[in-house]
Amino acid sequence: MTVRRAHWNKHCFDSEDIHSNILKTTLNVYLIPLLVQRLQSKQPLRPAQQQLLALKPDLQPLPDTAAKVPMVDTYLADIAAKNAAGASPRIAGGFVVYDLPDRDCAAESSNGEYSIANNGVANYKAYIDAIKVQILKYPTTKCANAEAAYKTGVTYAIKQLNLPNVSMYLDAGHAGWLGWSANIGPAANLFGDLYKSAGSPAAVRGLATNVANYNAFSIAICPAYTQGNTNCDEKRYINALAPLLTAVGFPAHFIMDTCAGFGIRPTTATGDPLVDAFMWVKPGGESDGTSNPSVPRYDSHCGLAEALKPAPQAGTWFG
Image 1 (cartoon, helix red, strand yellow):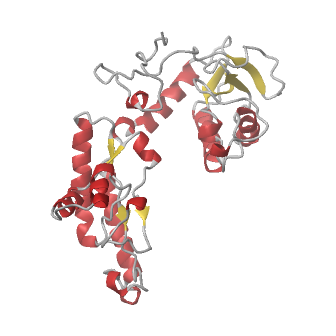
Image 2: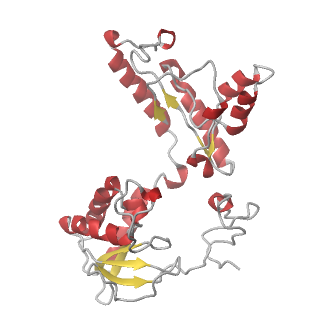
Image 3: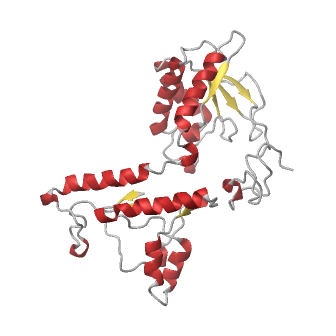
C-alpha cells in the first residue's frame, strides 16, 4: 500500500509504466474487479491496456474517497477466500491511499473531497482510521498468533532447559534480516525481554546466527544489494549487536552456522572474542521445500523461476 500525494493519470497510461515488482516474485497482486470492468468495457483494448490486464499494476487507485473505503473490505475478503482455497502463489492486495485534503491543489480537475479550510486534516485522519479498521479484519492467517506463541514457547524452553550441563544459544536470524538499523535495536530489546521473563537462566550463553542461511562471516566490501545495511556480514552484525545485548542484560556470546553453504569447517578458532564457534547446524544440501505443486507441502517459493528445481520435500537431500 502507498500513501499518495501526486496526481495519478486516470485518463491514460503508457506501457513503460507497467513494470514488474519484486513483490510479484512471491505473490500475485490482486487486480480489482472494478478496474477489470472498466477496461473490458472499452473495446477494442489498446495494446497498453491489454498489457495492463495481463501484468497487473503493482498498486491500484483505491480508496480515493471515504465512500470507497468499504470496498477495501470487499476486496480483502475476496483475497482471503482465494488464498484459503489454495491460490498459488498467494494473492496480495495493493491499494493507493489517495485522499489528502487539498490534494493535487495545482491540478483543479483532480482536487479531492477534503479541504484544509473545512476540517480537512481531521476528515483525512478519520478516513485513514476507517481503512485501518478494514485491514485489521484480515491478519496474515498463517502468522496471526505467532508472536505470542513464539514468546511463550521460547520462554518455556529456556526455563525448562536451564540445566547445569546445558549451554543455550537462541536463534538470532542473520545480518540480512536483523542487521538493519531499524531492526537491530528492537531485536536486542526482544532478546533482553525474553531472557528476563524467563528469570535470566544461567544456561543461556548467547545467540546463534545464520542458521540455515548463506551469509558470509566477513567480507571486505558490502555487496550493492545490501545498500543501507552497514552490518552486511555476520561479523559486522555480531559486533554491532553485542553492545546492545549487554545494555539490556543479555549475554553477548555467539555461534555461527557455516554449513548451509558448506563454508568454514566447525572450529572454536574464530578470530573474534564474541564468537564461541563456527558450527555446522543446518545440513548442507538439504531442501527447504518441494517445487512440485501437485504434492502436499508444496512451497511456492521453491516453484519460482530463480529457484533450483526439481526440489525434493523439505528435510530431504537434493539428489
